[in-house]
Length: 423
Image (tube, rainbow, N blue to C red; front, side, top):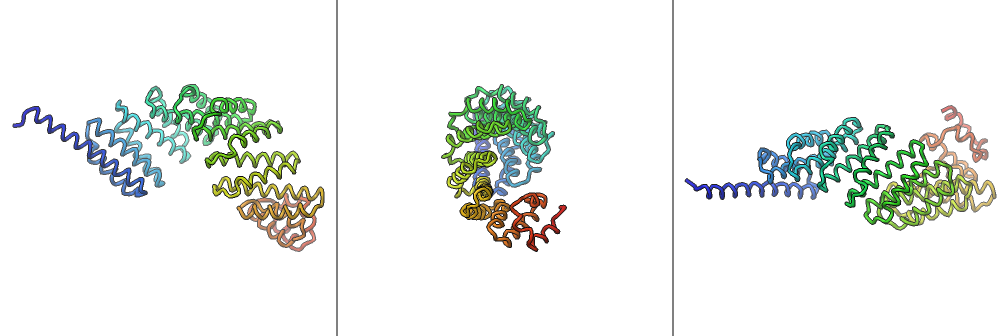
């Protein structure tokens, strides 16, 4: 018979072996995931949960919880959202009442992920219930990782309310709660969430046509976080400047709108972060369109040229779209300048920029107009036919556009009128 001390040594060895076995299997699965072998990783997560799921020791339970959480994330990454939701429910069922810090972190993260998946599936009310459960269970937790999850849960609750359910007033209350709870937090990840909350609050006010209030919020975002070097925070500041300019546009304060676009470009024009480049390219495009609206064509063309020079080689779809739109709008400006000056160089420039924009997937209607004005009626009407069929323009738009007066005697124009009139 073994002595009590010998038995304890054996038990300790067994416990250490089980801890090492569970942690080893988890790391094996994570390695497979990292290598893109997700299906194999899922098998290992399942085996870990099967072998160690009944173990009562905290040092082993944390690996089971981690495996369930990672399994849910992997399933969601594979597009198997419904299966992921089941796994997150299992994580909460097994470990939701555990007070161990490591397990609370996994449960909080699982609830956040579950709520986010439900929101992406447009199951808004269910998502709200999950975010509320996350906030109720973990709102007073001071653990850094848990605070990040609760802050992010509040942010996504607000986003679900305003973007998915259209309940902007309720969303504003949630964003205020986020800012009240975490506005003074110095943790970079939490600061990024608060900055995003301020941006979303400003955008919600803008959608409610409460432009003056939106300006106050955007200014608060810029004041608090304007000098922050954390990339995720810089992205929100860039968005805040863009939103502030848009709010001035909503209020028809054109000169102030242009000044803010200049500030956005001055601060972030050389930033290489894709999310920030999207904001600066959009800012340049909107500045150009504002100048076009104000009939300041020469300035507008200079802005569009700047946009193309800065971002013409960017492969990001959103940025390429802005470049294409800038070229199409520049084509429109040149068409308008030709009508004023009858200078052939304006039409040459209009056609060149219109073709460049179409090559990038942009609108072809302004190019069609330029070709008609240049006398290339057949190509112009061919493009017009494509624009009408795609819904880019309607025949009512064409009939009211004086650029087509040069083509009304064409048989092809008459055919298009018969085919598309009244549609």
